[in-house]
Amino acid sequence: MTRTSELGNRTSTVLGRKLGAELLRLRDASGKTQQQAAEVINATNSKIVKMERGWVPMRDPDIRALCESYGLSDPKTLVRLLNLARLDRERRKAKGWWQESPHPGALSEYIALEDAASRVRTWQLSLIPGLFQTAEYARSVTVTEGVGVWEDPDEIERLVDIRMRRQARLHDERPLQMYAVIWEAALRQLIGGPGTMRAQLARLLEVAELPNVRVQVLPFRAGGHPCISGPFTIISFAETEAVDVVHADAIASTVWVENETESTAYSGFFERTARLSLAPRDSVQLIDTIRQEI
Image 1 (cartoon, one colour):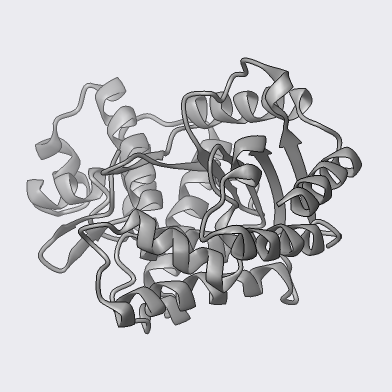
Image 2 (cartoon, rainbow, N blue to C red):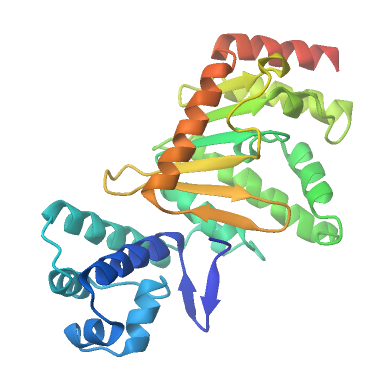
């Protein structure tokens, strides 16, 4: 799935789409039509469409009635769906600081999930993870990524500010558990020039010392690996019922992976690549060596 979609004032969210997809799967398995589902909750066909596409928040009574109609007999599955609906409603109502920032763009949904997350695992091929970036590095990345898009200096500064404010999650009262595996190329690529990169690697060494942060480097000598096709981030939540969500950026689009089977596959790719990487202590030594070489 791609970036957050909108229908008038209805917004499709990652969690809403996941819940809707599960209800659609249950309806299909029961053999019921959208019209029959609508009759169960005294609604129109269009409401069932909006629910199954994640366009609207869902009420617990509607979910219970639909699941009963679909023949769902597993109480644990029902509890999981109800908790997923609650998480989605909370995310829709949340008034985070990022919503006050001008033009947060496609970052808005990602930051909302990051704010609710308990753990983030990220694999990066060519960039230092955003939560570890210095302002100067982030500014250089924004200019590079934004050729033909981000040309207004004020707009660039707003985007840099958003990235800096996100980093508070590493230090707040419920610090985010952050696990980053970074390819050696990201450490050697001189984004912003030698001075900017030296400062960035020094910052990376600082955050690697935080108790809630784990940094590993995949060295060039490791050769081929399971994650060679592109970077991605796995977002996990404290609630056991909430399945991991995977976010992957392509050149001109964003992909969300929202089902348990695929998110589990991404976790497997991440863990296998992490096992090929240097241990945290050895990773820190390599980062410091590269910093001194620049």
